[in-house]
Length: 237
Length: 168
Image (tube, rainbow over all chains, first blue to last red; front, side, top):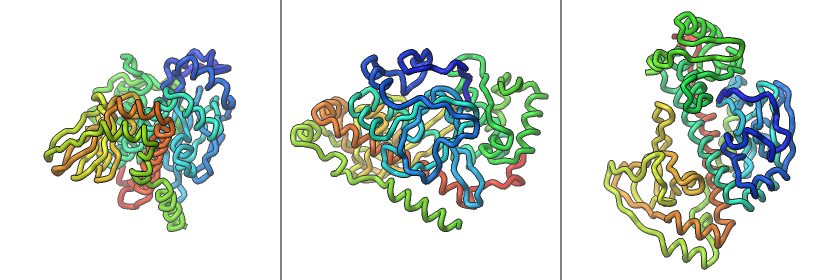
């Protein structure tokens, strides 16, 4: 998911002004006070790997700000991007709770701040607070649907234009969260977007230029606004 | 190298396999009595919708007989998540999460389900907290399997899109 975010990182969970907007961190005061005591805040530069596919799952990572690319490696060594995780997303949760190695690789695509909690500490925290385990279940179910959604986007959309339109609409709607303006930060390169849409970098560049000329979208820096969602929608049919 | 990578993924898939139902729902007598006392068996005809996505969750279901299919919608896209077969636990996410169904379940053939009502589950969690964590771990295994299966699917040549084929 691509989202707009504040560039003022929270110093701790108790004083985080974004907490009520984030599914996992929106805890009761008692659970929040406990949550604040566990784990550490870590800053990561663009390109930093938080964990790699096949690594033992030793920590759970909660994104405070920034975006992280979740990917896997294909048979020919190419990276397949599964999704873009954003603020509030919990990474490594399924591997930690299932006690299996990480299924995917997580890499920062922009500077980000991540709360990192050791496996046992996190499991004990969930055991102490019903609300936290409820949020963990919601987080897992969100991941579950995203995996299938992503697989279907690649498998079924007929044209590259349709798949790219679908991707932009998904990111836009996720970021807009019901607001009328559909705008989001596009931190991925055209190559990476091509990977997610199952097409080539050249095609992505050509299609984005086409959408811009048709005034369906505007792009300012890394900010992309969808002006005519209906037109993009038609391409996905 | 490719086959090694596939083998590794299949090994990981096996490591994330579902745990036996009896093991998952095993709990001390008090909590066990709470669950078994409240459990209901419900029969369904082919085509019947057992519950709908976003609808209120009545509890955790266990497939006793028949075939069921799970489908979800996200924005305007419909996705088939796969079948639910005898022995499967259905809707851990809703029962452990916010109590709203995360997908729609329909009967493909005649069949029956056991329903462990939410209130009985809640009381069982209070009486025996490890039960909640055990079920949460099972949900995590389900997500882990979905990730690995998705990666395996995308590793299969038939499902990959070449740049030429994907052109607009």
